[in-house]
Length: 453
Ligand code: NGQ
Ligand code: ZN
Image 1 (cartoon, helix red, strand yellow):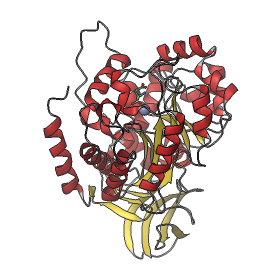
Image 2 (cartoon, protein in one colour; image 1 turned 180 degrees about the horizontal axis):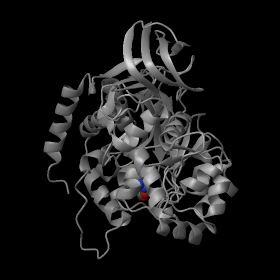
Image 3 (cartoon, protein in one colour; image 1 turned 180 degrees about the vertical axis):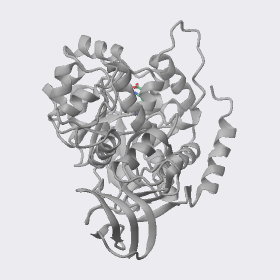
Image 4 (cartoon, protein in one colour; image 1 turned 90 degrees about the horizontal axis):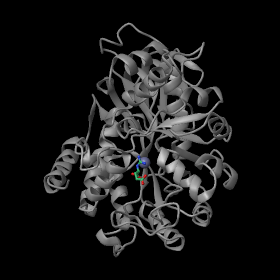
């Protein structure tokens, strides 16, 4: 049993002072009391730590390598994607493990307690399955053992090169599964994470409507009871391709053909019409937003104002991992709305500041999308916690929602002092406990990949 005590803490019914949080031996919150005398480990500002709901870990190692123009007159998502395919063709299982451990460490140091890994790099170069078909899943699991982060693993079904059912391109060979093969891989991935802590979750991810058939989507979403994630409506060309092949825009098609419910998390959704936004919000599914990557890839702007007015749930992911920064993701989300609408405090409500609305949404939606009993400081939930630095000048003398606003809009993740994932105290004084070893492993991989792009 561990006892934490905080001057200020964000509880489900709002801010409280002099808060004692008891964590049991399994890593769950056992008891929360307010207005009590200091006891145990003392912290200034205690928050629930959200899940990072969307990541492709391997892409972290190509951050900064795709900012030049190629021969194509227009650099876009699609040219970036070609570079990404080229890059991943060099990666070995050892590389993937080292990169994933580094990504998870950075996520923890940024304040995330869980990594929802949308994992599609299954096979050896050329598409040959590894002797253990879940080799790469096992590498993600090994990284999670090293970093200690909560893991929700989403093995990805990726069958086709486009909506017309064309074969995978050479750059996609390492992802390929047919529905039967995917069912076996999914089972093997479950076995590969069986030895991880009890907060580990297995879900499923049909990659996108470009990469699965309607039958494949049905088959794959019937596997298990975990979360279901899919990329949806990210790019204009993607919407047009789906419309041409399947007779409806992606959101319309999905709502008409799948039982979309709170188990679902739709990633990006940057290309939705107002009626699609309202209809998808009403399902209770989470919109998985990745504002830094969506900015980087020129995806467009999610209609957050309308989504939130419709009661939609949302959470934050770091997707391409070009930069892992929790406060910056939240800030970028609101700034994108402001730039489009020429407003301020776009997602704030009369009773809650912008920072508070964003943070509550990320904690609630992140936990839902991760299939994780977490997202608040409340008994029975996993102790996914984050302590901010009470001595940071931008936080000094501040209280309540202003703390969140100051962290998210004036500060950055250097204000994150301590992070716990399911009670595992992994970050202290801003540093991950195994950071040196994890950085060294990542550096070795980077040296090997130096000339990859
Ligand atoms: C992915 N990323 O799966 O990594 C995709 C690119 C694709 C984003 N959509 C590949 N941001 O969509 O085909
Ligand atoms: Zn993605």
